[in-house]
Length: 208
Ligand SMILES: [Zn+2]
Image (cartoon, rainbow, N blue to C red; front, side, top):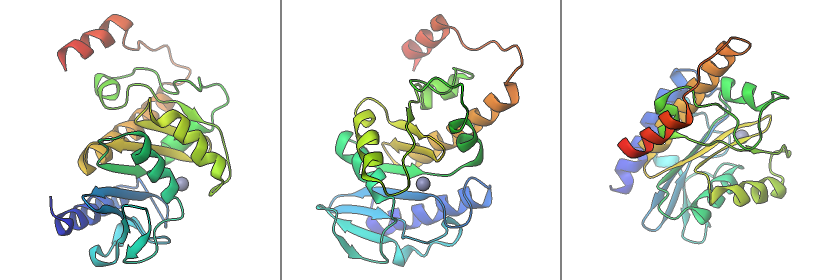
């Protein structure tokens, strides 16, 4: 896919997520892998009105070479690419229901959400919680780095999800599945619930 097509796809999907309330203000950022570096949403930009021509471009070394300055959270993206070869895009949002779940006191930090639906199991599977660190703290990058080799999706405590995918669509759809599952989880809280069983989960693994 050409760089121009990638810039247009980033702009289109970012706008779609913004308009559906998955991100707001200047929160959330997206990156895409190119043959010669990365595209990243600029710092302070709103995902609702990205300008394809002003999207930040970084070279192979991560040096900013074109467009506006990249998001201050670019390190969250970089550790995902470094730890997960084959990653084509990374999405990070402050989406409301995912953030709400990331603040709950009684969640399992090894796997935050139960297997509510087959699509969640297939698109996310296991979701570990990354301990809280202030934005920009290098310990946050280190903590994400430690989990990234085993997980394409992680949830930052009191902050939001970071999701890697083979393509931009992959990463966006998985992030949306996570957000909807977080919403379902909150709706079902304190209600007697049937989650998918171990046998049903292993059957999915065989079918897809
Ligand atoms: Zn953030």
